[in-house]
Length: 162
Figure 1 (cartoon, rainbow, N blue to C red):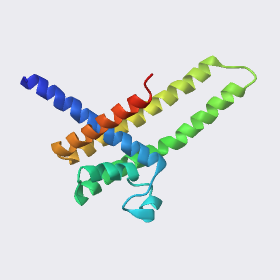
Figure 2: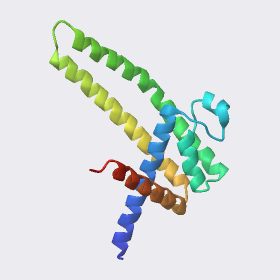
Figure 3: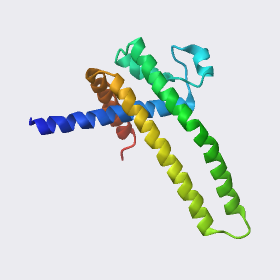
């Protein structure tokens, strides 16, 4: 295989790992779950969640790696905390626009655009956190996560095919 092809495969693999970690982290941040940290850690904001912990178990992540990744996603969640309140306000504003006696299409579009921009900013922040987290792991660990995610996606596609 040519060096260019290998570099492309490595890039795709790294992106897959970053997305996998980000997806797991976003899911854990949104839903919580039980993990080695117990209920005390849950009270502090969900920390990892069961899926993130499971993924790190699969790759035999060290305690130092776990702590670094936890800190990365905790910082991202803190950065995004203010956006949640702003998002709720936008949803309420949109609801009031749709229930007004006269529908103001320009105002509705304006709020929709604000909501879209906010989602994009949140996705970008989580992507940055995922990249930082992927850099904490070794290439072998990232490959293992990519392999697990590939199998998971294949199972998911099989269940929803046809």
